[in-house]
Length: 87
Image (cartoon, rainbow, N blue to C red; front, side, top):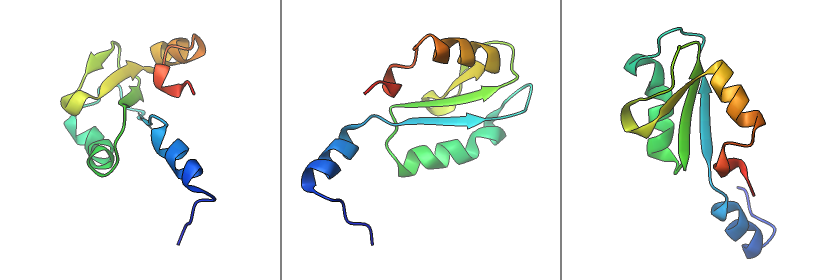
């Protein structure tokens, strides 16, 4: 069983926002491709859920999941565009 070093460590860990990212090689992601990510979102609180694929455009999927073409994801990541990654 895991025991944190202190209550402060546990509080800090819980306060960090979570980002769930799933990478797919598909050129057209649909509902069947995101079952695992949706299951994770049911079990864990995540601030943002993202699928990165070979799709052509950014779009919203079921459950508030955002799909990014890999080029757009990389450009946004390198520019510091994902606020939930900041400490």
